[in-house]
Image (cartoon, rainbow, N blue to C red; front, top):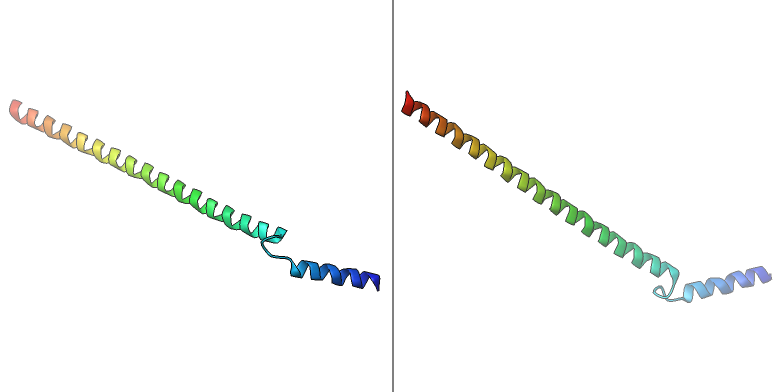
Length: 82
């Protein structure tokens, strides 16, 4: 009988507690803030990776333009000499 009374009293204490004051509220807030930070980190990584890809694409295009320019110069020299 005492065990039942203790269980009921403790249940009432838990049910009457404010959610923000308890451990569960702290866990929920921590999980939400951790999730938001993780998404922010993933977004920053995605943006940085996109920037790197864009830089590599620009470098490749620049190399192709230089190669085309060199080929045109070689053709022009060949035509002048020929």
